[in-house]
Length: 181
Image (cartoon, rainbow, N blue to C red; front, side, top):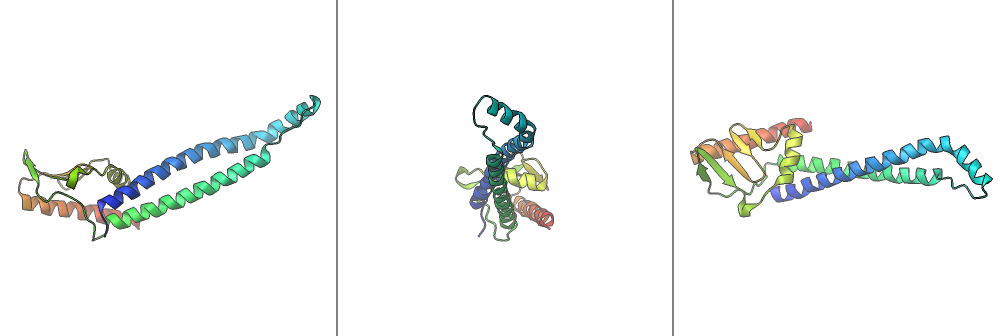
């Protein structure tokens, strides 16, 4: 059974792995730059070392090993991130998705407001969901505002609010399924 608590964990992993990927890309760029520059310096550096009576330390082999290791780490993180993103989409589009909303809403200024149970917040879920949909958070779909802390429906009738909420979630799921293909 898919639920928002699990999706929050998956979304957090996606964000963490993306941050690690960015760090690896920065280090990899630095290593590749050094590998590119080394042949330009090697002749002068080795001659100079010989002239002053010290051993020249050719870093090329170590840099190549570091590059290979970084490339492998990058590929592994990319694969993990792709799998987690696929899992996120599969879970959030599941017909068994459980969204832990309080069953009794609050009413304010003609709006019906559902909070998440136990004051839960799903920041990572909505960050990834917004990104996948190409929208900014909070998401507004068919008079329903979906956010990390609550769901606000722009009607004051509870039954109508439930129908609009169901319709908006179906719309989000359909859109994600289309993007998945």
